Amino acid sequence: NDTPALAIREWRTLLRDFPVCSLAPNAQLRLGLLQKRLGNAAWALSELSNVAKMPREAVDPAGNPLAPQALLAMGETQFELMGDRYSARQTLEGVSSSYADAVLKGPEEGEDWSPSALAKYILARINIEAGEPGTGVVALESLAVQKGPNGFYSEALAGDIRAEARLM
Image (cartoon, rainbow, N blue to C red):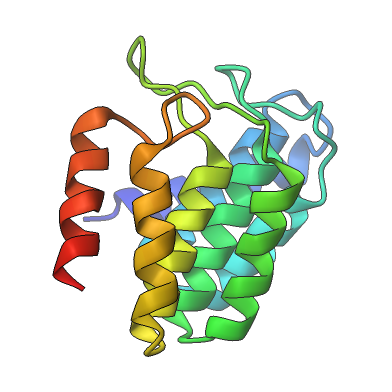
């Protein structure tokens, strides 16, 4: 399927030809997310790091700030694709502290979510994988009791997190 290659080419063309247009920041985020999905860690981090430096006023079409989305994707890329727990922790701890009050709108009504809570969830997973299950389980349990939108995605997912914590 040529769709990802076509999307990458078109987004790069947009960024090259119209670097200050209103769509450019979101296009750069989407380009970084696509590179991550394709497993291109270096390209993903390159694109995402540019978005992560954007001011809080830079938003996607739904009005969500771009920087925390980019930082979350960077942390996931560092952890999942590069196996770099140290860098992932630093990035995700930054999301958790810098965007503790941020709430992003999901595609459906009532699907608001917290980038800080998601960062804490990924950090808990990193701790568990690093052989620190106690720290990870405590973090998972604390996330499971947080209520949205500053908590985790939904009550159903919170139940899944509680079950995951008990299995550790």
